Image (cartoon, rainbow, N blue to C red; front, side):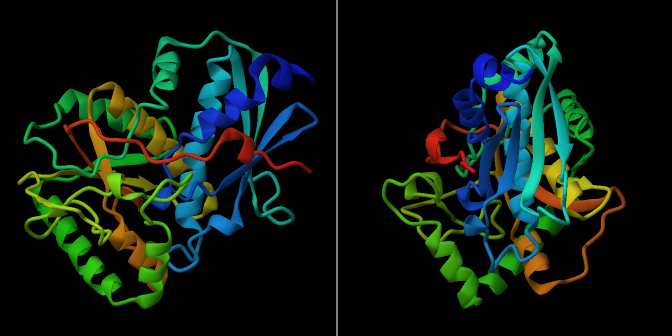
Amino acid sequence: MSTTLAADLGVRRLLTAAGQAPSVLNTQPWRFEVVHREFVELLADPDRRLRVSDPRGRSLHVSCGAALFNLRLAVSTSGRRPVVWLLPDPEEEPELLAAVRAGDRRPATAEQRELYELLPVRRTNRLPFTGDRVPAAVWDELRTAASREGATLVRLDRRGVAETLDYAAIAEEELAHDHDYQAELRAWTMPGARFDGMPDHVQGPRPLRDPAPVRDFGRHAYAARFEERPQLAVLTTPGDRPLDWLRAGQALQRVLLLATLRGLSASFLNQPLDLRDMRARRDPHHRRGHPQMIIRLGYGAPVGRSPRRPATELERHA
């Protein structure tokens, strides 16, 4: 197995796949190191951590968990079983989040091949969605996808949606007066061509009315009417520690890829979670776990993709 990773799987292919993952403000807070041509190590990139809005590193871990799922998927579609160690040495190497090795030969499943093909297709869609409801059978599939990664996807009913939208609006208002938060937000929402961050074309329009089902980045070129009945779900984990956050990220990416396969669009409404982390407030613990992501799902028009760092810039050389 000493040369399999480099020769058979292709390091560039693995890192390109991992780099397609969603991340908070498209910070892409990950690095990778190939060790003895046998392991790929996933490391947090401290220079890309949002120190104001993510003081615990929760969002960073969720983002890196999504990249880890893509890495696993790339190994699987190469005909190998991915062997994964989460947080191998948290005391001595806290930035080392996971190590992945290509195990024994195992043909990829049809589902794995389908999800892998969707890595460059998946988008975060901040446009208005249609009023069409997501079928119950698809919700069941998404819940199962989350559970396979150790998380729970909680579909909100009408009352839960209304309450969550109110929480998001209240959090948005408080964060609008936090100068440090706004400065950090502006640093990652610059216009123009970049390899990271959120250029204007991915930010979406300003909602015509409140409470809004999308986040306000303050650079909207136009206003639009959003769906009257947003469909929201909350991704939760049993605990609220780094290991849980990594699992949440893997669950999130599995859910998002399956949603893409079923023709769904998705965006996020995480202002209440940012505010919770920033203010060290008590976690609004749900009976099904700790909230890690608030996801809006529905049917939207095609959108452009966020910029991505080249795979050659993702690998750290010892």
